[in-house]
Image 1 (cartoon, rainbow, N blue to C red):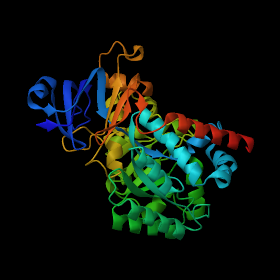
Image 2 (image 1 turned 60 degrees about the horizontal axis):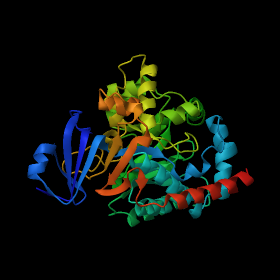
Image 3 (image 1 turned 135 degrees about the vertical axis):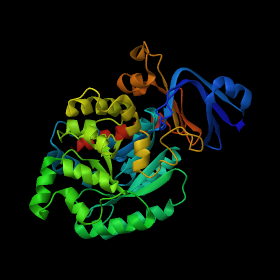
Image 4 (image 1 turned 180 degrees about the horizontal axis):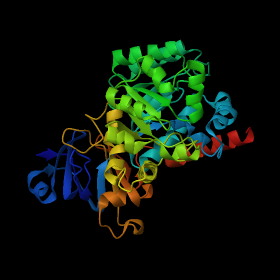
Length: 438
């Protein structure tokens, strides 16, 4: 077998169907894809390779998938903390966006987010924000993978003037990136309270035609549910179901307010849920019933939300919080075990985005999106179970090597495709600008 790259790690967690843990194995990569995963002693004799990367004391995992974020909002990190969601949105975030968000804001904010995510082992993210064509370009230039949201709201912004305008611009974005190796698109209607019935039905019709996901905030707070019952006479999920949006293309974010019948309906229709535990905790939005969803057979992925409400894009941290919170909400120490938390951050996210044939696990034929963490640090010693240490003890500072499609984008903890100094300097300029006009 010929390979361009052979990566030898002390442990490999491929996140396959059996949740195997492999010791002293190697991954052979050619043309950006995984050719084989085999014992290292066997690889030495059977694989001809141009390069061998030795990773003693490291665990190798699939690239993490951040299934919900607003990348440019890194430039609003810490701008309006310790406020409830609607106060945070109406009095701080939306006025700031109205004044400042333009293509340059989105470009610099996305670069900062991409830098942070890659250094934390995230190789793919699912975004929802204005000027998505800018985020797509910046992300592709950095060699990162993304599903870029075709944002839809009813009200005018600097980006578009009406729901029809948003949809038209989204369709143009999809046409531009139709065959791109790293960039996919999804429709991203903001929420049921920000998009009326007709645009939602149009979004679903186009999503069915194009085979793309529909990414939406849903059942985020108790107030959202009460508002929907007041204005529409039904809960938000019921309204979306009536409009034809509840099905395999639905990627429902937050879902902190769920009744048992709604969980059953999500399972029945094949809809996906994205859990954002730290953002929900910070905004006191409620608790997603993750254990119940998983038990019912609902695919649950993991997201950070935006850095303005988290305040980081740290999916390793979200894994730990999801596992711990899941146990507390379920009242069971065995709920949301480490293996489930890792699946939520990898293969479940890929499945929600329609990318599970390409990424989310380390298997022959899939794209070589890989992350290596050094577990020799004091925080992860002694080491009895690499999976448990990864979820409950490891930090993103232990991410040392990252590959996307076989291209190394993080080497020894540092980016190879982004100028960190320039990105941070630009962020500081925006911080000073927003501070002066806060």
